[in-house]
Image 1 (spheres, rainbow, N blue to C red):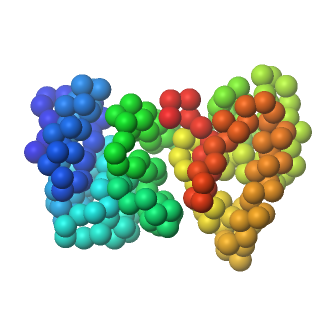
Image 2 (cartoon, rainbow, N blue to C red):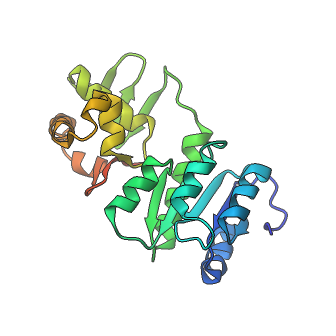
Length: 234
């Protein structure tokens, strides 16, 4: 069942089998200007994604009929809709698997509503504006010029190696989203180095040093999982 007449509002599908989550989330999301649809099973959620093409999915991993990880794998077979996982599972391996299976982000239960709304807005912005090769992406005073392979802080050029710029550009293209160690290593070093986390840690350390003051807050470490280039609203 979907929300009222909210023509033009971003449509969020909440897939969760806990009635209290729906009772909490629906009014909060609608008050924030979203149109909300609910599903309580994986089968219903997958059907609604195919039939209604929502703008964003909030997905619980612990569904009664199918594990959320399998839901992610199946929906990525036919949809690129951004997905934020809502999970009470605290194991890092579960979060990493969700991100590797196609989730855009995750929020642990119990979660703060403000954080969830910020993550939702960030995910929607990423799909609303597809990065153009000539686009300059801005985050925390840093400007990343993808076409010219240049980075500047407060207008001052930052001298980066090719590898450092590739790392920054990868994070910038997905700004606000968590990228796992495996995703980053595979993209930047190739599949043979998917487990060589030391390579990545050294490169991140070098990049933060060149980005200057506040770089730790801008280029956020998600312990045991990966990194995120902070979105100003997330």
